[in-house]
Length: 155
Image 1 (cartoon, rainbow, N blue to C red):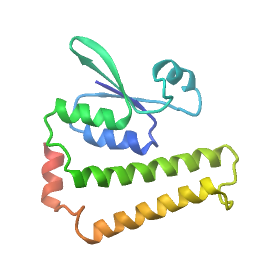
Image 2 (image 1 turned 30 degrees about the vertical axis):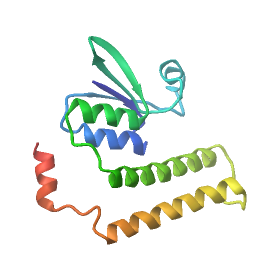
Image 3 (image 1 turned 90 degrees about the vertical axis):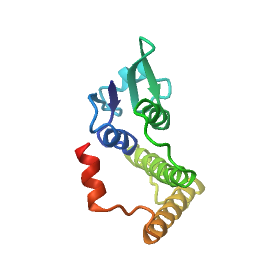
Image 4 (image 1 turned 45 degrees about the vertical axis):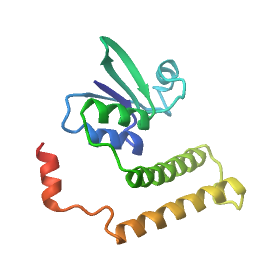
């Protein structure tokens, strides 16, 4: 198994956490620099992560972190996420996607602090996501005990 991705991508980081106890190779990509041509040849969406595994005797690539997660959950026979957990993950993904878009715009020299519809929607999405997640934390949705964490890392 190989995971291609940026070390700063929240979507790649999440997969690396899932794969921490697995035998896989991480291939770092600088998607804004020298590796741009490689990713153009590899993934038509021009995004990371890209996951590679042998499926039915053939090396195949899987695009998008959500698709990789579904594949790994099946491969490792991990209990699927509940509807609530899927919704929570959708909120996290939307917020991360919004933050990544704003970062790319900022690196492109665009002034993202202006009062423009696109920027306002992104800021509103981020704020709404953070408020939702803070509320979920306050309700205990994401709390796990130290024993559970140790069991996870010792698997």
